[in-house]
Image (cartoon, rainbow, N blue to C red):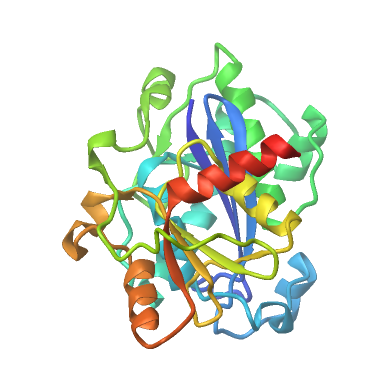
Length: 305
């Protein structure tokens, strides 16, 4: 079973902007990676929302905006079924935020762990905190990454219960109206076919040496055999930094395989590659590196460690 569990924190009650996004990727019913990403919502922060999640305007003043974050993680939303606890809220926030930013969302199948628990079990509460306490799952509530991780663990538990009926939400705003999808169908959902993945054609700096300490990395596309969480931990542990968008501060853009159904119109190039090429032409330090070169460095240094 593969899926992407998500959680959004919002700066105010309008729910058309996001100040933090949590994503947990599950591959073969195992947690692959978990991330919590701060986002500059370019919107006001209400005191009530701050009391809930503790995020303030100063916390996100240097964070990427939603467009940059979306373009970095869009492939995940396109390729995997989406899981959330009280998914109607997260889906509505995503739809409103995308509309506010002029982004057209792909078709996505949403699975709501709260509603699935309501339909399959009799509890006094179906809140995330209650269910985590019941199952002994550690939770730092209203941290986006932690909430997405908790939702992922609840969905894994649901899938392992042979009598549980799993189905998607439908496209209406009602949580209780569903389109019937069996658990077997849920298991079969996978990323797009490998033939859609292409290595973009661009000016790679094949002779460049990779140095991690004090250098800023950005990634685009899929890197085989390494999760985003492992990549980020590796770079941070070795004194480097990872950003979600390309800027003049970026030293390396690591390019993996891109989905041709998304970037095919740009010659296989993502918006990050186009930005890096533009900055390089203006004399910026950014170098475009094939993902294989980064994987070699990653594997070699991990073998030494």
